[in-house]
Every structure is written in C-alpha cells, then in structure tokens.
Image (tube, rainbow, N blue to C red):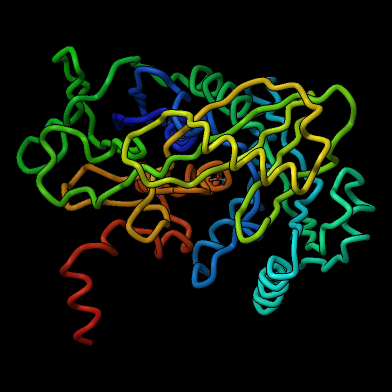
Length: 380
Ligand code: GLY
C-alpha cells in the first residue's frame, strides 16, 4: 500500500511513523517539517485543565491519548534514542480573584461529575506547592495526572522515527490532489511532479482546504486560530510544574522544562493567516503571568513566536474518510494537537491500513459536518 501524507506537524509525523511501521510505503510531504503550530506549542498534556463544558467526547479522547503517552514515548525513545522532555508532575490551575475562583470551583465539580480526580487547594496550599505564586492567589485545583512534553524534542524524535522506518520525506509544498476515476490517486507538488498513492492523508492544519483538485465541500472548513507564545529562561528553580492561571477571567499558562525554559502562552485570536507577534499580545501574556508569579520579570527573555491552531467548526479533530474516495482527513486538533498525537496516530494509521479502528474515533469523523448526515439525524 502506497500512502502519501500532506503535512509533517506532530500528527502527520506520528501517523507516517505508525503507518510505515505497519508495513505501508509512506511519503510525507512538507516543505518545513515541524515548523507550524508544533514549533510554537507549549506541550501541555492536559485533557482536564483545558476542559470545556459540553466537550465530553473530546475529553475521553484526550484521556485516552494521555494514557497512551507513556508507551508511545517509550516506543519512540527505544527506536530513536531521543528523549521528549515528558513530565508527569501534574498541572496546577490557580485563581487570581474570587470570580476566578468560582470558575475553578465549577470546573472541579464538573470534573468530579465525570469521575476525574482533582484536588481543590486553598491559596496557601497552592503556594506551598509553588512558592513563587503571588500572595493574593485565591485558590486552585491540582490535576495530578496531567503533565507536559517538549513539542520540539517530540518533533525531532518523530522525524528520526520516520527516517528509521523508511518514510520518504519530500520537502516540497503540496499544490493539489491528483484525482482519477473520482478517487484520490496521489498528490501534485508545487514543481508539477506527482507522488502517486493508494491513500492520501491530509494533515496540513489550517492549510488543509488549500489544494487544487478537491471537489467542493470535500474538506470542512479548518480555520487558523492564532496563539502568541513567549519563551523565558531561568537559571534557578522557578516552577515545579505547569501552572495555568485564570486572571480576572483571562487565561494564561506557564510550562517549565528541565533545562530552564519556561513557555508562557497563549493568546487566542481569530485573524486569518496572520502570524505577527504584537506588542498587545505579549503585554497581555506578561501582565497576567506577572499577576500570578511576580518573579517572572527577573527571568531572561529567550523567544517570541506565533502559530496557527487548526480549528474545525466544533473545535474537535476531524479524522476519517472524506467524500472523495482514497482521501482521508487528519486535522482540526485546535488547542489539543500535542496531547492528541498518540491516539490520533493510532486512529489514522489504522484507517490508512484498513485495520480495526479504536471505537473512540467514531465521534470525530469528518462527515459529522455534512448536510446529508445532519438532515438524517434531525428527521429521525
Ligand atoms: N493548548 C494550548 C494552547 O492551545 O494554547
């Protein structure tokens, strides 16, 4: 089986590795692997702390992926000898004022109703865990099973895994889908050459609809949602675990790495394909981060970046067949791409290889957005 994958972000890379390991001849197409949202991402592994009401199926997918992470990184490390910076020290959600605390309490009750362990903390208890927190922090919630990973190290390890398993990497832009006898038959590159394939997986994030040859409506809309991120460096211990904060209703997170990097994110802006880093975006992040952790102003500045999260119409991933036979979709992971990488690679490689697909995938097929299915469901 010849498989072409468009897009070498975390999802495309991991799926290419797993499909090649399963016996397929895989070509991965991307002019700059791992340079999109994956390069900017902070790498929180948190189905719980980023939970949104009404997203239970997504929560279950996130929990399944978090459970898959230990074996996934073990396989990756064994194959490549490369580490991923994965941490399992929990995530602390803290509230700045009493309104923020009400939100955190509601979230804890919602989590409890779903049987997910979390621990309510007073401000003092939160500061005992993280002594750099501001004295005024009102309280918090510890998600002990959450953690983080370094997406840049993950990308490097995944790239090495694709090399080891014989994936052919084509560093060119995909310009279109080759369609023959009403089915996808390969990918046309920007230099006019073609990569022939039995199956094509489109994992190009917000650029997934931007290909010639796609019949109208084949790919539901994937919108770019900008996130600006600051990277700081500390020479002395500063944070023991990831801290997410709610500051007067505004969200900020700080993800520490063992090497002293601290990633501060992230804005959420719907501005099309704009990746400018703005003074306003950085000010918001630093303002909120300083309210929670006044000492951050002493840290060294390292980097600012902006990336584009791929958002589907309901902000959940789209994984599965499209209306064009032979063309599959693997995108729309929005704020959860790194968390969902292991489970997505399992689902997408199984789909590509015609192997049994985990049941959990059923809620995420792209056809949930097609008019026919909607009409059938409402008329029942
Ligand atoms: N998951 C973090 C973010 O999207 O900003």
